[in-house]
Image 1 (cartoon, rainbow over the protein chains, first blue to last red):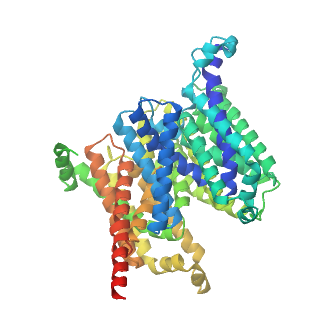
Image 2: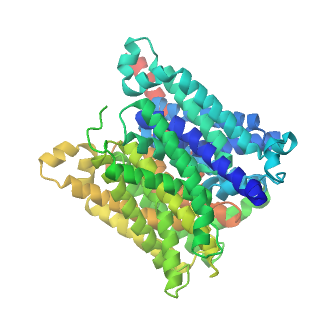
Image 3: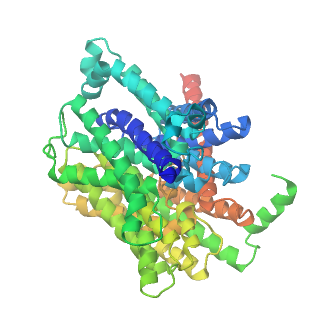
Length: 304
Length: 308
C-alpha cells in the first residue's frame, strides 16, 4: 500500500493530468486543422527550456514557462519571416524551423552538461512518467498531511496549474471558441476576431506543452493532443459532448495505460517494465482506431 | 571554436582522419544527396509532414526487427532485420494515414499526427521491453533515434551509398514525369500520366531514404534533410533540374560537414549537428540566394526604380 502511494499514485496522477490538459486544448487544434501544432510545439520549446535552466539554474515553473514561451515566440516569428519575407511554402517553413529548434535543443542538452542530471534527451522523447515519486508518503494519512503533501513531485503542481488555466479559459471563451472553430467567417460578422481567438488557442497549447513536456515527454503530449479529441470527434457532432468525451478517453487512457505498464508484464510472469508514457499513448491510439472502425460518425463528409 | 579544435576538424573535412571516418563521411554525403534529390519532389507534392510521421513510425519496426533477429539466433544489431522491420512499419503507417484521411471524417493533419504519435509510442513500449531482455546489443538501438557515426561499419556505409545512387537513378529516369505532376497534376492526369503511380513512386523513394538515413541522422530529425535542402535550393534557381542538383549539393554538404563535426566530438548527436548545418545553409540562401534571395531582390528592386 505504501509503495502504491510512493510510486504508483504520483506517476498515475502525472500521466493522467498531462493527458487531460493536452486533450482539452487538443479539441480545438483538431477542429482547426492544426493537429501537428502539438508536435511542433513539443519540439521547439526544448532549446528554450534548456537555455532557461542553464541561465537560471532552477526548474521552477515560471523559469520553464518563460524559456518555453520565448522559444515558441521566437519559432513563430522565424516561421512567419520564412513564409512572408522569404516566401517559403508554409509546411516547409514550419518543418525546417521545428526540426532545427529541436536539433538545437538536443545539442544544448548534450553540451551544457545538464543531460542525464536534470533532463535526459531520451526522457524528453520517450517520456519519464515513472520518475514522479513521493517518498514522503507513509500511509493514507499522508494524503491529509500538509508537510507530506508539500513534497509531492513538482511536476504535479505544474500540471494542476496548467490544467486550471486551460480549463478556465476554455469555459470562459467556449462560445467564441466554438464559433471560430466551425465558422471563422461567421465569427467575424458577429464581432469575434478569429485571429485573436487563434492566438489564445496556440498560447494555451504552448502552456499545455510546457507543463507536460518535462513531466511526460514529447510523444505522450502529441498523442494526447490528437487521439482523444479525434476519438471523440468520431462519436459526436456536438462540441460540448466532444470535449467531455475527449476528457473521458484521456482519463481512461491514463489509467488503463499506466495499469498496462505495471500489470501486463506481471500477468505474463516477466520481470520487465514497460514505459508508461508509451503504453498510455498506445491505448489512446487504440481507442481512436476502434472509434474510426465502429464509431457512428465515421464516414464522410469532412465538412461540419 | 578554439584553434586546437579547428585543426582536427579541418583534418577530418579533408578526409585525413583515418579510413573508417572517411567511409562514414562519404556514406553521410551520399545520404544527404539522396534526401536532397527526393526531398524536392516530396516538398513540391506536399508530402513533407507525411514523411515526418513515416520516419517516426520506423521505431516499432526497428524494435521488432531487433526482437525477430534475436529470436532467430542472429545478432540483434543485424542491419537487414532492423531495416526490414523499419520498412514494414513505415509502409503500414503510410497506408494508415491514407486510410484515415480518405475514409473517415478526420482531416489529413489529424491522420498524420495520430499515426505519428501512436506508432512512435508503440516503438517506445517495445524498446522498454528490449531494454530488459538479457541479450546485449540493445544499447546500439539508441543511435536510431538521434543518429550516430560512431561504430559505423564499412558495409553499412557502402549500403547507404548504393541506395542513394539507386534513388538518384530512379529520379533521373522519371524526372520529366515527376516535374510535371509537381507543377500541374491536373494537366498530367488529362494527358494520361499515371499520377497516382508517380505519387506512389515519390512516397516509395521517401520511404527508402528515410530507412537508410536512420543510422546517421536518426528517425526524429531525418525529415529535416527532406525539407530544408530543397527549401534552400529554391533561392538559387527557378529551374527544377538545377534546383534538384543544388538541393542534392546542399544535402550532401550538410551531412558531410555535420558528420565531420560529430566525428571529432563524439558527444554530439550526429543528426542534430547535420540538421543545424542544413538550417544555417537555408538562412544563408534566404538572404544571398542568386534567384530569390532577399539581398538580390532588394538590389533588383532598386535597379528597377533607377531605370524608371
